[in-house]
Length: 208
Image (cartoon, rainbow, N blue to C red; front, side, top):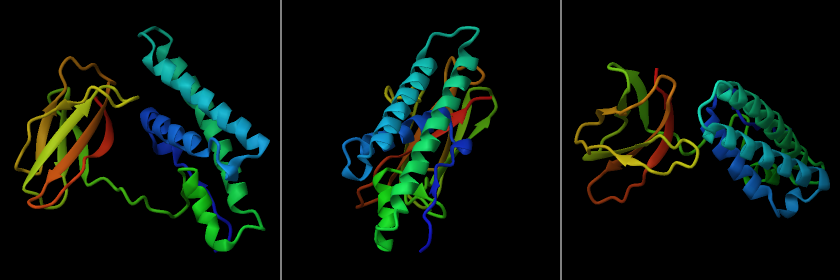
């Protein structure tokens, strides 16, 4: 199998997605016997602190420095989360560990290894369209109907708004009172006869 490499893909993820990923990783690693070394425990704590700091900056009232504050906090989180990923790599590549357990170590930290495709690939897309504040959502595959949710709470993903259900695989969703740069989380649920389905998402879109 060779060396396992952790792939966090932070450069292509929004702040909200990285918050969720870092929360999941630190929660999974806390108290785990695999990650009990003092330096890893300390890095888990540092990553938790950086995550909470970014979340606080995102939730702070609007100010002249808010954008810069968020950018700085995101940089600190990326640094600490990347360092944590390298430590997970170190555990996974321990020479004493059997080859067939290396990937499992990475997954137990809620991280992906390089060349690993995530099984929960979203089957819908979201794009900006005119007029401003409108998102065009399109689902893949065949379904009898579709349900759509959205929320402005891109941190905790609460207060979801239910848009009109459709029989078509696409629709336009208008986000009222939105400002340029507002980030919105979207969810989709296919309705298929005689089959239980689940919500998928979020997909994050910045309104421009």
